[in-house]
Amino acid sequence: MARRKIMYRKKSQNRFSMFLAVFVMLVILAVISVRSIYLSGRLAEYDAKKQELQTQIEEENRRTEQIEDYAKYTQTNEFVEEYARDKLGLVKDDEIIFKDGGSD
Image (cartoon, rainbow, N blue to C red; front, top):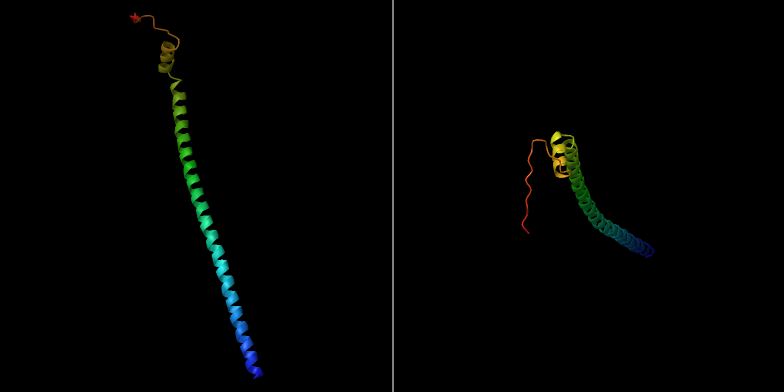
């Protein structure tokens, strides 16, 4: 009879240990799942930010190229002549200027 009680106690202790182990495993899985969902959201945010920054880099590269092209253009005679005509009002010696009398 004493042996049966000892066996019963061992079985109940084993069941409790198994229940506790399963419970701990479930808690760990729940924590990992929640953390995984959170990290997936953060990853999506970082991917969106990365794409936005990549777009900005491409825009700035295009802008840099435009600035470099304009800098090259400003070194040409065509630019100097255009600037002199438009901004300074200069003309060549053999040119005739016609002004609009403008009827008000």
